[in-house]
Length: 150
Image 1 (cartoon, rainbow, N blue to C red):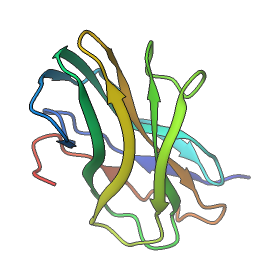
Image 2: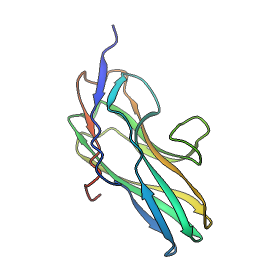
Image 3: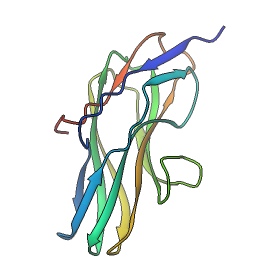
Image 4: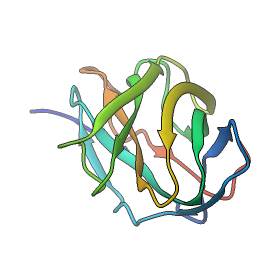
C-alpha cells in the first residue's frame, strides 16, 4: 500500500518575485490550485502557478524566488522545478526553465535562475512543481503562502 504525501496550499497573493532586466509594465495573477495529495515517488506535482501578462516591454525574467514551508523534512521532496506554459496551468506543453534540489527540511527559500524573455502583450504561466521522494513521510505538508516575502 502506497503512503501519500499531503500538501496544503494557501493562496493569498503572488509568491514570486520576478527579477527583470527592464522596467516593463506587467500584471501578475494567481490561478487557483486545489489543495490535494501527492503519492510518494511522483513527479511534476504542481503546487503553485502565477500568470504573467506583459503590457509594455520587452522584459527578461532572470529568476524566480519563493518559499516553501510546512512539515516536510529533508527526505520528502527530491527537487523543485519551474516550468512555463503559455496557455494553461499544465506541465503538458510546458517548457522546463530550471530547478533545484528539494532535499531540505521546512521552511526553505528558493531562488531559481531562469531565462525567459517576453515582448509586449506576451503572457503565460510560471508553474512551480515538485517531485516527491519514494519514501516521503506520510502526512507531511507543503505550504506556499502567497503573502510571504521570499
